[in-house]
Image (cartoon, rainbow, N blue to C red; front, top):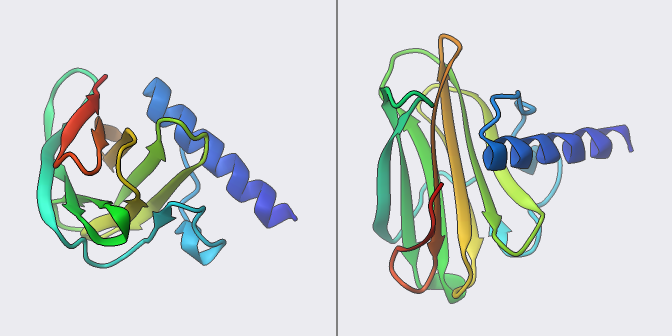
Length: 162
């Protein structure tokens, strides 16, 4: 029960940080090691298949670009699948996270922790709804982030931007 409460708390912090832009910490454990993904979500997976529909460099709140980026792919598998990974181009390990949430749901799915190359891929299954992606890489205490909403089934149709 304590582990479940910890995961729920971490998920709430992840969503709050993603929505508000807060730099609060998120539990650094892959959620799949603790629980199965909620319906409509999958991952973390090693490879995101499909067509690249969105890529963006991450930047600070002040607009400084970093050496990290997010890639989101789309495939028609599973009634439409979006898959997101966040990467850094730096040597060593850094805190990285990718959070995915349907705009109509409160439940997100994420991969967060200290990684050498990437966090994710986190998947969303199903066409026709706005799916919000939040990505962050922290280097020397500085957060580099990106937020975007895409509608699967419409080949990268942007449905939300901060």
